[in-house]
Image 1 (cartoon, rainbow, N blue to C red):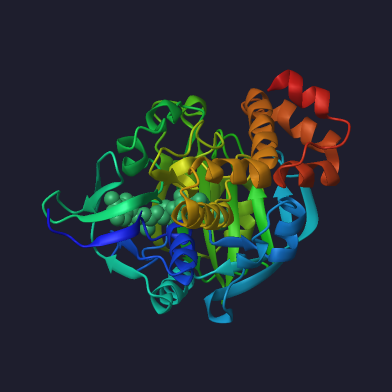
Image 2 (image 1 turned 180 degrees about the vertical axis):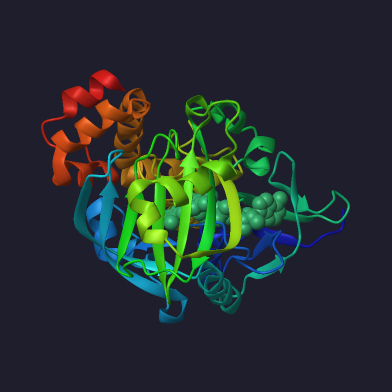
Length: 392
Ligand SMILES: Cc1cc2nc3c(=O)[nH]c(=O)nc-3n(C[C@H](O)[C@H](O)[C@H](O)COP(=O)(O)OP(=O)(O)OC[C@H]3O[C@@H](n4cnc5c(N)ncnc54)[C@H](O)[C@@H]3O)c2cc1C
């Protein structure tokens, strides 16, 4: 092995890995990112919903690096003012919540440009593997052509080969309730409201998850469903479920009438909260690779960026005075741990009711808009702590 030597190698150039690289390079560390896609952020596999910083301050109030939650104007396709949740029987609950709808290709290209301008090397179109050693390890397409990193950041999404090779409990995570399968069309020629993001609780067409219509401006929207295995009958095909959602959900079908489907994408998403361990002596797992997705809403762009930054800060401390990488896990537990835990509990509680359309619909109506908003925002709704605790 004759590759180059780096302080830190990041496997995966998504929002998490690139945010880590931005900070590491800014602090003067020698950093390399491997990204298997030929273009950063493309093809897009995401609803691209990105709450603005002011909302994230309310959602995750203890995050110290919240200023990184921002986007350049040219990466913003549209802006939403509110979220509207639609219950299984078509009741609507709307509350104000501001978000950007990104063009993730432009967004991630921007993060990549900043990282490069700070001095990071980014190799795109390279599927890299981690070959562990006691002191760091080698990363590259093959062992022979690998580069050496003293610290490795597993930012390769879910499931993470890097985290698994590092001995982190990636495999233990993969229970049927823990992973959602998401599929989404970009639709065009739509007349949907351009400043409201809609979530549909629809056990028929998004069993174990929810459906979404996220407007992208110019009559376009990301339209998708997330499902989980225990709620899906063997004979159901996920593509048919998405078609069913678009054509037969009473409310969504009206909104989407006349629309055309453009590209189709799909991916799996960890929704069981963070891994039980997210670091070793020389490896840290961040973003989806570490299960850092908010279980009640499936949002993971921001938590990937935050954990990427926290891992980078831990690496800086390591190079300053050999501080253990456990400081990374301490930091994310301190800053987002409680919200991730709450969110997981509420997801577990709703798991018990999701399959029962009538009961679930009635519960949502009893809860009302304020409490529904709390659940989506990872807060235990007022007066429901015992209820959530008993069901979870
Ligand atoms: C259909 C869908 C809709 C979603 N909608 C939203 C939404 O609206 N808002 C939101 O906040 N979240 C959403 N999410 C979740 C969000 O996309 C992720 O949580 C977020 O992208 C996580 O960022 P990350 O950097 O951890 O991982 P990723 O974005 O998955 O990035 C990992 C990168 O690693 C690369 N990679 C993987 N293996 C290797 C390898 N061996 N070598 C080199 N590169 C590798 C991949 O190509 C990828 O670019 C959605 C997810 C899906 C599937």
